Length: 57
Length: 243
Length: 215
Image (cartoon, rainbow over all chains, first blue to last red; front, side, top):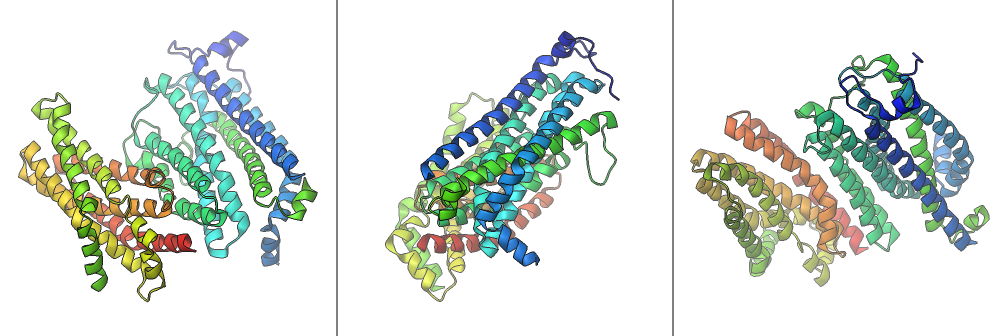
């Protein structure tokens, strides 16, 4: 169950499938978008809370 | 005793203190589970026979899609609580969940579009599931605009709750769209009544990513509700003590 | 009956309120074949899409200030404190709008259907669908306008459009059902079911919203 699906780092980046297509760009693009969106949301809320806390003080 | 507990927890002050204490633990645990599940799904699961490696987007797309609908259902529940029992905290929660719902729906739409390119050969198709998710996204934006257009918070809360309830008719339509209409989108891999249509080696990281993402979204809702409470209750003395 | 007559008279007198949307509908249905270089056989395929969208837009236009005038001149406030149920008056108001705008638009749409497709059967099948759908649209857009009563109709449109889009999907299926002779009465039953729910629930919700506005 815990066998690595890819042998090298570049294989993992490219993620070439059996049909010959490289799916890596699509997968990594989605990973980047999801993590950046979540991180940005956290940062924005933290900033807004800090701003209003200073205002209240 | 239950009534006392609900009454106590329904106070914004108690809610804020309690969730602020729980927040770091929930965040740490859910981030760990999410990142581990994503790692598992991306590197440790075998390639899919039909979709190749592009199916790995499932570990990011499905949690977002599931949460976006669940958040709306949560808002509908909070709307009922607010309209029937006039619990102020419910109104704050509805307002704070809306932007998070919009963000998760955005993630679902974008990840789905990108997944569609290698799978269907197109980033967009006017099929029932995709269009109904787009409708959900527009609804979230509409909810945010409606509340922000009113300066009177009491009116804004009431109208927001009503619109959430009326719009909740869209949720079963999204859920069942892949069953009711013949669409490009695959039908549910995990159902309550049937055996999962997905291999266990792929199923477990999927569950993990759903649980992890749920925890992350709960943390975002906590932050958003904290902001709402600070804005709305800023003149109360306990808020000054809290900050 | 008095309220019905009063509302009918009010809308009839405000001719731009009901003639305007009908004229806009006629304009859309007349103009669309001029703007596309379809062959005749393709025109009837595009026709139904344009028809549903035109009906939706016209009902949106028709309900733009359905409650605004009454809110501004205090009529809504009077109605709210009267013995008559506010939700009943609202449902009558929407019914009047349907009689003066929805029904003519449905008849004209059906007539255009006959003109473009040449099929009387098709036109007769489409007519009840149009009548039910226009009533549903009127209810939904009235709800949107009630929510955004003092904020302009654009906000109301934005927030109620997502509720109407699934209905457009169903209408697309109705056209296929009519053309292939499949399950037309099933879809008609579905639309009637939606209407029968909406016709009771929406006026209740609108009356609650209006009372909240008046507080």
